[in-house]
Image 1: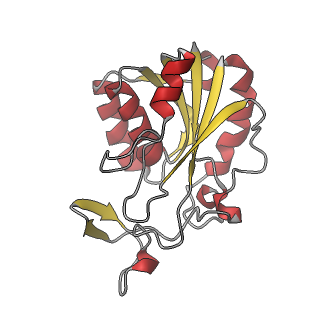
Image 2: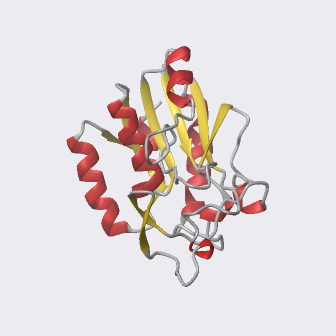
Length: 202
């Protein structure tokens, strides 16, 4: 069963959003055009409480993109983004959600960030995505969304570790840091990921 996992295609990651990914909006029509080629489509959604400790604004004297030690792990401090029940947390208005069968929210614990759609960053809590995919019989996963080298890469990496086959649809994702993305892409390839195009998948 070919499954598309749409990662965090939300307003705050779009140009003009609180944590904008350059050209992030360009992936929306690419995703929409390939939705009907998959047997199953699911999505993840960053869903932070306003007091989330990954937000620089919740640390006095700290600025966005500084790094701190947060409960024993390194944490980049982000601009406040994808706060629950705000416009920024909503999916891009032009993203076709009709084929999406389930949405998995992440980053809900104020004390732990969650880049991956499968686990929080301490790997203490499952989102339920892995169990859902296994119950559906999904084995072959394709990933798209934002941002390429962060949430998309973390989700894809976990998929590989969980025993799924995983491919990154490169023209249906955009990075926050293009140089870092090239390094991350090589790492993912080394772990067994595939790189695909929206024209040759599904």
